[in-house]
Image (cartoon, rainbow over all chains, first blue to last red; front, side):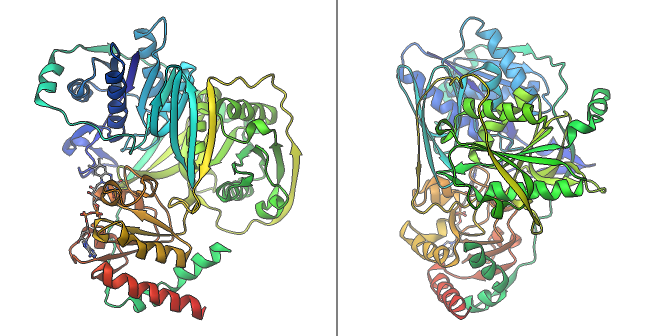
Length: 252
Length: 340
Ligand SMILES: Cc1cc2nc3c(=O)[nH]c(=O)nc-3n(C[C@H](O)[C@H](O)[C@H](O)COP(=O)(O)OP(=O)(O)OC[C@H]3O[C@@H](n4cnc5c(N)ncnc54)[C@H](O)[C@@H]3O)c2cc1C
């Protein structure tokens, strides 16, 4: 079985984002694999281990520095990696770059199972997976919380507001991974050594189409509030009168 | 850029909006009705756009006019085939409506369905896909969408570059005022396309939880963290949420410990919530957790550690053990509600 995973780099979630002149100052951020993509990669590796002879190929569309996350993916157990060297400016451009790269690596037949993370933790658009599936003309299922591969396709579950949705889809299918799908493995020293020997190809990603969405501005948010400390729960209820009455009103 | 301004001059094309109404088990979702109202408000401000809605699947439409307000036509595709969401069926339907009405803007209430469907539609329609709160220009026209990024440490505004746009309205972008009553016409939508070819769906079903209150939709969220001590410790929060008609959320530590379901996790790898009141109990306030409450109104924290970072983003704080503070709080709330 051919398995493909699309990953991206994001600032480490613990790093404090700096701002300079109305844009993000990336000089102090440390980039990591997008956490949701780790669930995607782990799931692909589990499928590979289940079906002998399978391969896991990882793609990323990003600046040359995103080679680091590909090395990590190889160290986790992926077989080969492609860096589509480009600076996509919106999710649509990312999806387009990934689509073209996948089609060029698999010109005859699409891989059976493709994985993405549900969304990136920096911009949280969550648009690339469904866009990519649409561009490839295949089925997809976003936000999978559980997954079972069968001989013809997959059974997957996702959370919807107030419940769960279950679907069974035929290959080829693209799955986007939600937290809870699995617990990603840690990278071992042996994995790192082996990962260094695996093929990592850089391909030029060119894109003529202008982006569909433009980032007009970004401003830091002041989250700090002045906390009034109270000692008594009764006092709190008095102070929350307004909010508490709203709640019950909304009920009816 | 050139191409950008040329296409936006097509005014006639601009003033037709389509609102997607999502039904779940035959009931039109409140969030969709809120989206409809926001679009009505928007249209009133930008000078008389024509608004229509699309409702896929069998649903009870008897009270729709009263609930929705405003003017417009609701196309009801009540075919059994649309009861459950399938990307191919719904894409087909929306494409037909968008083309049939010559719409330039499509609006959804943000939901699991919308997040799955809208990116596909944006590719088909070559549309700009935005999400968040509508941001308005000085003249009151929609300039784009604003939402939190980077763990809610910043707010970004995105603007469409294409003549057609799709917008996922977050719950924070509700209509501010009541929408005056008007005339809503409900008419059946007859599929004119040929067959709705499924890619590959073999089976499909949904299962609703008995307590269907979702943290992402609740007006009050009471959340617990590792400081709740155990799965049992959450009983106090279940009780409080029940009293308040709210939902119970959790930190990742509480979810990973197996005390609460993933669906209740709030934060960067969980949900973003926008309640009017958020009560954090035994939660330290890690940056990844705070990422999920950037749109919360009033924030209250209860924690034994007076230096816990959660107090930095709280309006009110009680330094104390949840095991002692919560029973008293629940009693006080009960008292308050009784008096009301
Ligand atoms: C990539 C990544 C993504 C993440 N995503 C998320 C996410 O989406 N959501 C999330 O929540 N976290 C997330 N985290 C984890 C986050 O960093 C914290 O570890 C987590 O939020 C801590 O949960 P907590 O506050 O419940 O536990 P702790 O940090 O252990 O805090 C427990 C708090 O309870 C207090 N306490 C203890 N006993 C009592 C008592 N009896 N009464 C009152 N207070 C008490 C303590 O003083 C302490 O402040 C993520 C981490 C990473 C690396």
